[in-house]
Length: 326
Image 1 (cartoon, one colour):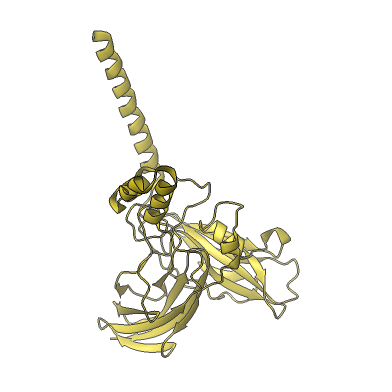
Image 2 (image 1 turned 45 degrees about the vertical axis):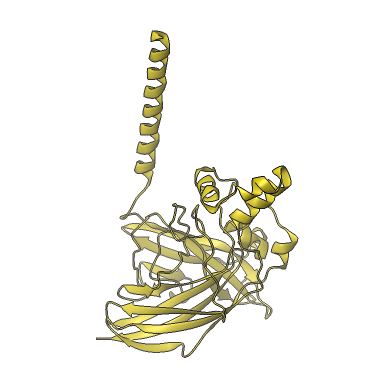
């Protein structure tokens, strides 16, 4: 009995030590603010007119801080025009395929360079038309986590991006502290089919154990299982399902969105209102396809708001400019 007690104590001490090591390692590599932003070249795709779109995103090393960097000496493209439509507001963590820059058909083997300097650290992304950087819909779906690495399916190959139509003017006016409403029509083909973990679990139970086993499956049990299950993909894992989200793209102050918007950045934390979170489920789709949101601005100035419709695999973006006065 003494030997068993001693062994139990040793195991417990080892477990506690291991947890401490893991905890310290995580805390040492996780930051809320003060870190740099890494620009990223995601690849390129051809246009029907012979031009090419170079695709960019970024990795904000912070989990909370969303720095603002105006176009200029700390946020610019070269060669040519410094302003290529890049964001000046950088959401936390990894943001893939955030914007595209069109280059002419005769671009050749030149490089387009995006330079960012945040919190004293300068980083660059180098974009070229090398063949191994060619992007198609399967690459986008795989890179963002809708598919496993190097996989596809008839459903994913048939998927087309949602179609986004902002209702009303593309340039609007507002006053500080007073909300404006923006309605957006989002049309989608229903692919890929939205993730329904409860239906999937019941179907498997029906196949394996019959109707009684399936009847015992509850949403709470499925969510608990998802919470404790390890990732099954070597790439980032994402829940498929249509959503539409507005975010600040450029602007001098804070923007409050009502209702709170689904995160477009890869927040993998539980219940983070993010498609990359363990317990996230697609929100209900409006019957008329119209997504309504109210926006309130904290400071005067020009704001560019970025709306993204994402079906899990593919996306479509829209923009609205709002001139805010006192």
